[in-house]
Image (cartoon, rainbow, N blue to C red):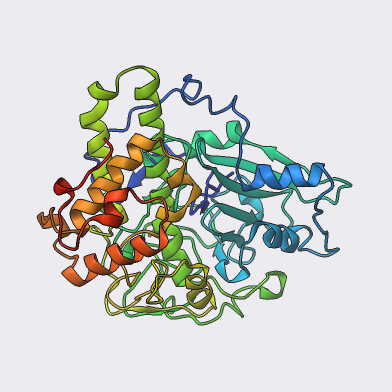
Length: 443
């Protein structure tokens, strides 16, 4: 799929431009060697996928469900979102030509993206296909397209080979993954510096985000959204006049062609967190499976534990970028996203937003509930759970976790105990204050 900016989604998994020059938001201090897609432990192309798109296709083939077609510019899109559980308020709009359907994308005709924890959908006005990414619990991100033309039996086409060139690179941790990017677009949406851009995640300074994206919502910080580099004599200079604090995109283009007129700032920030989280889960799962298959688990353990540390640091938002004095979305995403739960006995959820000093109220990634997380090899999950427990119980009080207050740690620990049924036994039974080293863990 493609999406340079984003993408889940891409935009999510929706990125598709030569990515050789795309750069990470931070320094590369951890190597991610290439893993053969046909390794016996992986077999990315050979294995039958078991992701939401593959399941929907099986239902269509059996006649158990049907995609409805609307005879207008929307076609299969509304029905597709309904069947995949994607909320319209997750809509984000990319106007840079960073998709393989780039010639049809511009500030007057942006690409629409929708996402949830498992799937992302990209729709281009007058495009030939709908682009999709879907997460398999073991294989990771799978790429699909769906022809927009009406069909007796719509069929999703797995498009890994066409998408891998841009979705398997250091920015995705060298596994098939998702990318969210920030670029410098010209007046027509083409890239001022083709093949280059900033790969964005939850650690990226907010004033460097959203180049090539429409952004609705308010904040006190400057950003690159809603702006183009209009002067060819200054190709690296974005015209930022009037680009902040838009509450609607009406007047920028014909919004009646879209399901809603917003490209919500909160949805964008959630997606950016989710892209790297997805890639980290896939990477740890793949490396662990390869080590187990090759009989090199003990030899690989120091590296795998270092990868676990990277994952848990990100899960705990220990390196999250500051959001200044806060942000406010303008769609219903801020209300609908937390409703997905689950909630503990006090009504708290890892999906609850803060939006003042940080993105989420309780600093642990909601992706811990995902099929992808649960699909990691047992030994990898054991290490992640142990590492999280060490931090949440205060055994690990290292400097990088200092922003997590005692109240934060206790709240997250309690929420997980109430809402995550597959926690190791020592999470449930250890007395308050007892450290992980005093508890029994499966290593």
